Length: 121
Image 1 (cartoon, rainbow, N blue to C red):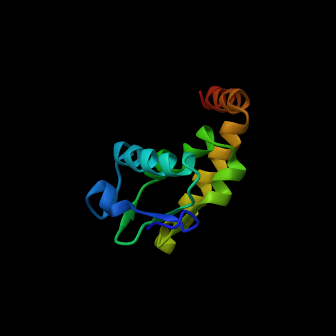
Image 2 (image 1 turned 90 degrees about the vertical axis):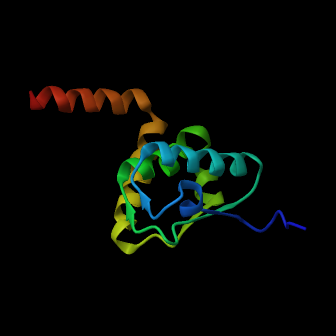
C-alpha cells in the first residue's frame, strides 16, 4: 500500500527514455507527470539520476512551467529535485528564478523583454 505522505518518485530518465534531457518535448512529458502528482496532493521527488546532459529549455519546460500552473509556494514545498549533476544546478536555479518572476507578472516581464530587444536593434 502506498503511503500518501511519502513523495512520489519520478525518474527523468525513465520518462524520457535516456540520459540526455535536451528536448523541450521530453520536458513536457515530465511536466505532465509531475503536475498530475502535485495536483493530486502528492509531494514529488524528481530524480535526475542517470541523466548526463541537461539543457535549460528542458528545465524550463519540466520545472519552470509548474510555477505557472500552481502557486510558487506550493511548488517549492511539494517538489524536490534530486540527483542533478552539480554542473546543471545553476541552470535549474536560474530556470526557477526566471519562471517565478515571469509567472508573478507576465505582462511586466514581456514588456521588459521587448524593451531589451528594442535596445539591441
